[in-house]
Amino acid sequence: MNRRALARWTQGGAFTLLGLFVAFWTFMGVGEMIGGDLSGGAHLVPAAIVVALMLLAWKRPLLGGIFLGIIGLLASIYFLSLRSGLAGVLLISGPVLIAGALIIAVSLMRAKAATP
Image (cartoon, rainbow, N blue to C red):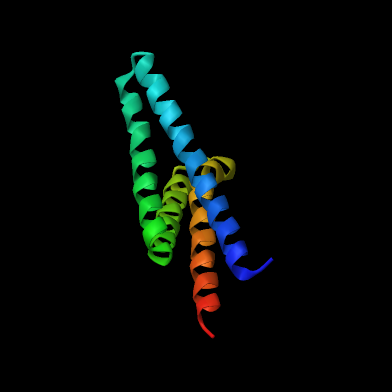
């Protein structure tokens, strides 16, 4: 498999992971709001932030990957400070951290493939 194909598959995997993350938070938020709890709208905030970062990563992979990594790292630090447990931290911030790292890797693969 050449570098371009690997970069394409890696980017697809990262965006699939982020899409599942967004789908989960959207499902949680809409489900709570349909049930009558309007505070479920707070679940839509992380989904909207990740969608905005996905758009940035689509246009500018290196910058988007860096921002995804920063957001994932900050979320990890915040949830670890709440002592919510490692499993909870990995479920909440893990997908964003992993996708950010994958998108940065895609950017570096493309840059290396572009150089002669």
